[in-house]
Length: 410
Image (cartoon, rainbow, N blue to C red):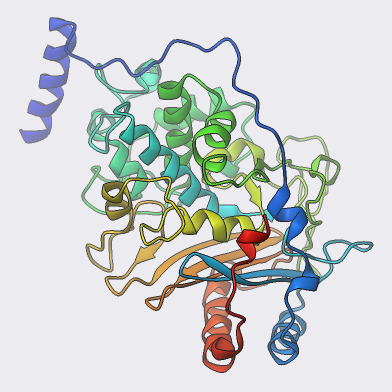
């Protein structure tokens, strides 16, 4: 009865007319161009950071896990203390702190920041309905066959509580011919649970959040993120990834599969057998679910701009930071972060074919960022091994880290 009453109320509002907020901004003729000044990525080099004993531990970690390259950045109280690349970005180039890499699900943190920026402008809210007569993405209502979709809110998408499932295969990384066909197929399916009653990790939910950003802002998702998230944080090297080796950006690493990994058909049917990290999945089509590339140093700077702690000026208001990092319980995802403990330890991980990434903040004000260009057999579970590496390095070398701020070299 409660569900039926909610849906009936939405329909009555639609019939009455004029009561639904407009979720679409007038299209802009041209987006404000972004000057691609990869200053942080260019200025912060391997020559600026060297702790031989600590570097040896990282090298040993790479050898044990057969990693081709790793980029590491360490901040304390918004100051960049240490940034170094290890191994190779490709056969001809060393890894550096400014080498850009695919970020996999770390992209979800970036998308969540974009949503919070829109909320601060009064253009979308966490309790905004996604579908239905007052929904943001009401243009897709004709695809829907399950009334539970009309219960989904923006917050449900952010917390992986919208009712979507990846059992039977992740729809975002399945071989659909177009985004329209993906949406048509998925939205016609019954939800696996009533929104808000439990949670199940969903890339599809964050693809919808990317479309919400486009609808509400009137800009393409990438353009909005560049202008409203990255540029204010002075991070100019983030770009959406390409799918094939020939699509990689200048300064971007090559990616490597684990030894003896089997080849797979390309997602778009172009090739019978490819390395999974180059054509096995539609990475660029995942948008805010897993599509971003960026460097360890710019990720560290972005975290410093959304942590609410200072001294670096934040790009989010304190209320938004609190909403993103508020802890409910161990079974509830935070907004964009995997987990935010009351102690101040926040975690965001990402794992994909050819990519392993982890951001971790600690109660003492430190933030550690790790990105690798190599898959391991542990997949997403590898984040625990990276976290253990952080703890090892912190316990042994924290007092040896230089007291400085490499961000000020920019």
